[in-house]
Length: 124
Image (cartoon, rainbow, N blue to C red; front, side, top):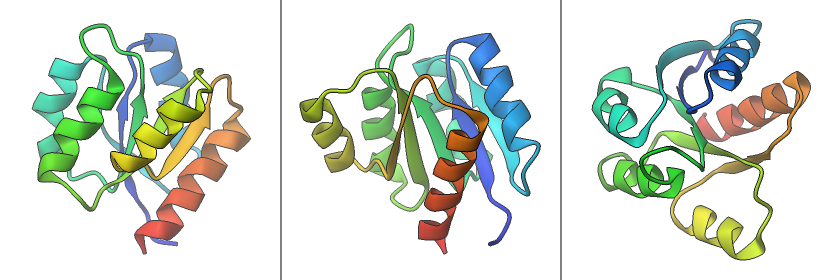
């Protein structure tokens, strides 16, 4: 599997640090980070990310809004949504909007790596 560039959108600093730390133990790399909708929309286009790790609950808008805005201009980057919410209707909306994988909180390092690897395989 080829090395993938991963962009992290997560408003919780500790969770974002943990995700970055896990990614750094893999063959993949972090291409950028954001803690809000505004920051994500500004930084994402420049990141050249292969995979977007996206928290669904952000302080200024929902991750679903980031997903929809991002998909208007980028159809190829794979998207992993991170959420503690487990609602079938939301899952359907996320997949219909272009999500490739849903990772439920709380998650383990192993669970995160598995989500990244499964999503990376779809990218090839």
